[in-house]
Image (cartoon, rainbow, N blue to C red; front, side, top):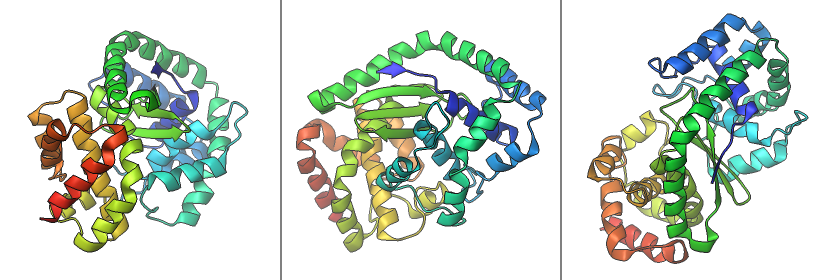
Length: 314
């Protein structure tokens, strides 16, 4: 596990902030100071206009879903010459099952395809070096505290995956403390969040294991829908379901499994399980309660998944 500071990710957050994103922790004086520097830079309208297109507004709790998350992921498919590996990026999106763009796929494709161009424009702005240096200073100061969190997540992942544990990399995004994103590139899992707490990091890593059972989840969704897995209204409100299709339900079922495992493997308590239940993932406490008795690992996860699905049918 390592901590890395991706400049393209930083540039994307600068662009989003300059164009109106206000999701940072206003009580975090370090980040608030960086935001002031961004606004004082008075970036050109064409740059702010492009980043503003990330705001879809379809999910009240996160107006930048799903484009904001897709943009942050795209940063890891841009090389040092500002060339965008678009085919690899769109393959990644297909594999993650991100919900459809609320405007249109063609509009999204046209927009995101220009990411490298606008990142390069932003990188060339004379105000960026000072903002980047300050951001790196803050990240460096927080890295010592983060190391313990990182080690806890790595140890838990190795306990579950064994020799097949993926490489885990944490990339800080200090501007959005209430959400997390991830990128998978071959055997590397890159977590994007404000802090590398063990549950968040395991959440993103566990998606790689649970996603292997999407066919079973789809078959369950076709026959039984959501049943007791989750609260439909809340899942739509928070952007986890696009509609009542089997594809959307499959996404929610996967999310419930992932959340249960993430809490248990990170040593979380009953309060964390109930937190997820209150936000619509009703089945998380039940799934978690079955983990100690069945003791699933990556190599025998199929039996656990099948057992839970059979139990949910009843």
